[in-house]
View (cartoon, one colour):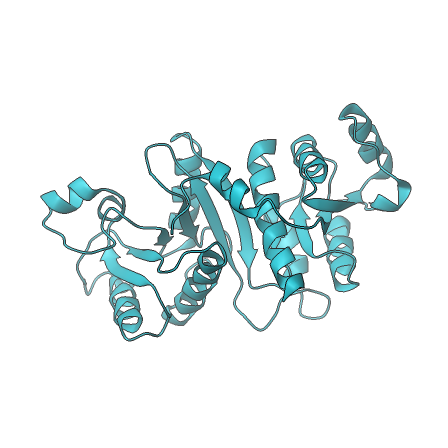
Length: 305
């Protein structure tokens, strides 16, 4: 089973109960518009952290009535991040949403050893991409958290994205461990990591999945390129997951596919005690809506369990 795009994703995930969501630095038009749309669709019930008068004014412009109890005063990005995470710890929210503040500011509050919401797992970011010309969703990881992951960290990153895919109904996700080449090179340590992950997957370490690596981006996504290069793999031209060797590769790849390539992106941080939405501040309201939908479904699943 694969998912062709975000509209199909919405049909599959639409039957969920409203999830209490805490929005840090919510005084951002695109974020608030996405939250409004998700609220009207019965996906979430928001608590907004930010400057009260600015939030009230913006909500009025968007025809989004805000009861006083849905606003928590926050003064600046650091204070908003800290208060939003504290609300999660208090049990008032089951998902955390980034508003108008830098990702690093929110995540610093999330990973704080004393007051954060991390678990014992490695946290990693998954960008879910709906790209014109590719017949199904792509899962790009990790372009948001782990700068230069070791082999051990890549195992955690792979497990996190597989958990997400399996939640969405994928029986045997196809993983391309991306490198610049498709052969192991002593000058490229990431190729050795890719070959190791492939061998471990074949031995059953990651459960039901197909892992290919090292593999270049063109071979992972393009059947014809694989034919011309005489590269044989069930993942070639069929990848669901693109496991990147560094945050730079993952970030650039994700932004290229949803920006110049005309795609749309949803994003989630996996491995915290609740799903975390960390769209770019420049993302559209529609892109932020897809992230809210995905994270609300994850949060709803955790509540059911």
